[in-house]
Length: 194
Image (cartoon, rainbow, N blue to C red; front, side, top):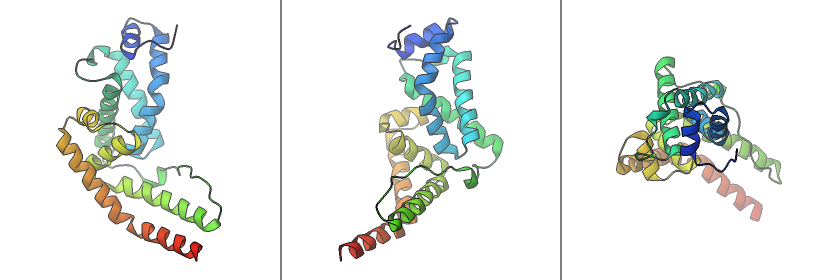
């Protein structure tokens, strides 16, 4: 079976019992949905659960997807968002910072840069995790998942202006939280040039 089938066609076949069609859809979108859920929740185990539940609900109720309302990718993001909201509701909290894994950073030439990169990476993760859920969600979908404002609006069920507002507030809060790191970076560049 070719991997070039459209998502909609694969979903139709999966709904008819074609396991290989579902497997192709799963492989196409598993990592995307996991990364989104992980960034939103901050827990690898919870992100695995959200990803699993997202695809399980798709398999159980393929008719919930309406190609007239959204693309398949947008539908999956919305389904993952709903599963994450259920996780927040059941957990009663938003996950522990201890559960966050360190994202890989690119190596630099000097030890000072390596220390700063590691520290900044941890601070960015912590700052993103500290955002209110709706702002964090908008930021993750726009900056990390690279979705358009219209796609985000469709996923979260809000208008584009609301999404823009959430994104603006998230960026402002991050700018305030991380301001010291931007000034440190300028000082190091100045010192190295001297």
